[in-house]
Image (cartoon, rainbow, N blue to C red; front, side, top):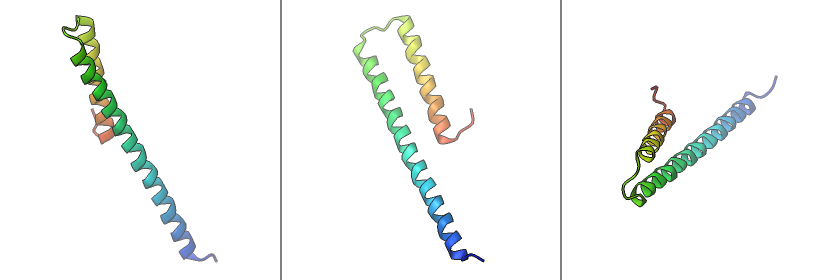
Length: 77
């Protein structure tokens, strides 16, 4: 019979690795969302009076970002 401490140690190391990867991925995702939000804000301030198609496109992108943030937060839409 194998030592149960070995299996417990391996399980804890595996769970720790998964947690580290998940936290890192979520921080990267939030950074990407912040970048896209900054691009949208800069795009909105650069254009004096945006055309209708540009406003529709920006509204669509904002809606996509809102949905992606909800997914990242674990909220069902």
